[in-house]
Length: 154
Length: 205
Image (cartoon, rainbow over all chains, first blue to last red; front, top):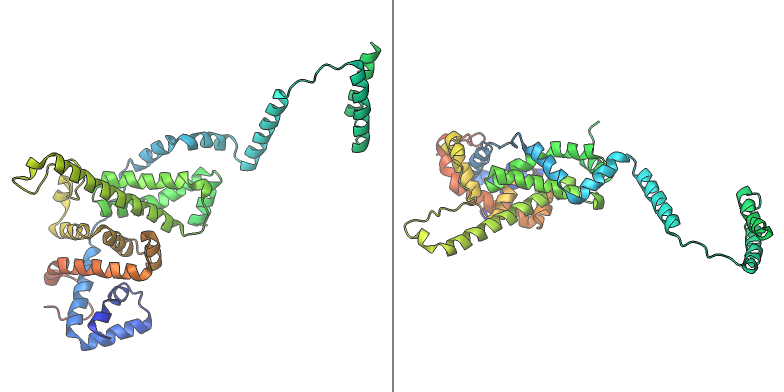
């Protein structure tokens, strides 16, 4: 190894990340080169010197300011309220689905008023549909089916 | 058991604010250290560290644990710092154009923007030695400075630093070499008379 090739090795040699083979190569060169030995000492000195630079910790009001800024986030504020109210995301999804269903039912257009003929046709269609769906055991459906007959009788 | 960064971030994604609080506790100090050394302005460093956390928080729903969390976080921090330094430079350039007469009698401009100069209270407590280190680091080109700070003080490996800076590992090694070489030239006089460097090979002049 020559002095120029050493340039690619200095940093890994100093920070201890050089492979054993790279270390050996550097050490072999150092043994034969006084200039690089001198340079190594300077690098080491600078490396240690950099360690003397003190770190400035966050100020005591860092967290308070951070919370303030988080609270000012427009979208997350709503999300936070929802998250606090509903701890489970699945529950949140189910609730939203329920609300959507409720809205859809509430805003559905009312059925048009029916003439007796239309009622009879509808009655047949409904009966067919119900028969095909095999839900005759459903008491509520049967009760709904009787309603037009009663109206007709009146 | 200590939860990993990825586990905490997945918790944040699920809406768990306690996980976010833990990430905040874990990384606010290293982030502030890095940004403060990068910018030499504590108020700005804290402001940007908070901005990093806000961006992490805003991106929580799209979070996919593909990269190391610290790589992502320090990448945001580095980009914010580099942008801030660039903006400051532009601001100073604009101000100097607005007030050309100011520079007639000297190079110092009375600008109200961070210029890397230590504040009065910092000067009072800081030894000349520490001030020289700070100056030498701050004199490095910005990308070299970021590389040295992540390497020396955050003790990250080359691969991670390269990802943060968006360069190849070989480009990073070259960047680091140039940075440490500049620091060696700048700080060697400070090391020579009293430095603890003569630990291994000895024989210092």
